[in-house]
Image (cartoon, rainbow, N blue to C red; front, side, top):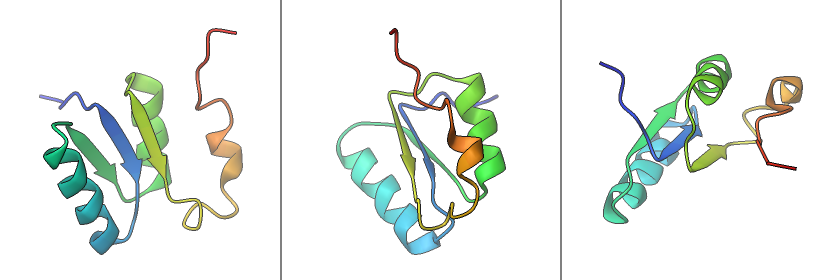
Length: 74
């Protein structure tokens, strides 16, 4: 069964991903951290998380996949 998350994150660094997970848990949020941009983008298209966190340094050269990620009503 797929976990529904309040927050999804793209962070390939294990140290920072554990910090994101810990901070989210303390605040009462569920988070799923992805270590590949492709998995992150697939999840972003299939779900509606409240927050999406992207390590832009790790996504260098892959910004075309991030276009349209933010869904706004206008």
